[in-house]
Image 1: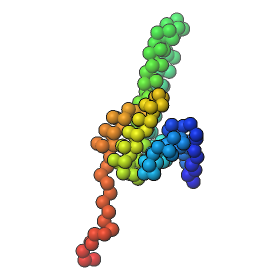
Image 2: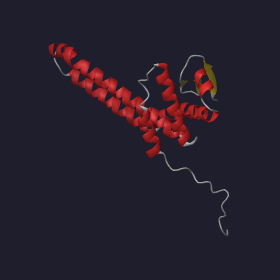
Image 3: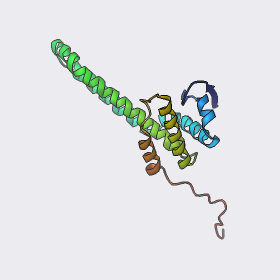
Image 4: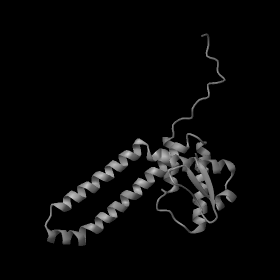
Length: 174
């Protein structure tokens, strides 16, 4: 069962991946009801993304990379390990941070695509634009969310066509 809560100073919305969505009070004041539906659709799409095949592939690639790094370090001498720790580990740390950012961006774009199945894509893009403006005005930045231009491009170019309502069409003789 989906649960909702309001957080006074939160400039965004978050989910716990188990059906609870927390919405920042500023969103309730500044977004239209249609835009709030987009926010809720996006947040409720996060658990669906986590269970999707795209997320599984991303996690598999990350796990294989970590396993490869661990096996590589297991084969070197202690002196080489110290040198590697001082020189290579910072590079791997940055690479892992970049991988985590890419995984976060994939999740956010994936949840946008899932949400676009439940709300109008143009309203979703306008909602993302409004949220981006609110974030800029607050001076906060997000390391987990991709830039607006990328999310808009994904929604514009990768969203499947809308389902055609055939309930009012005649189907000819049976």
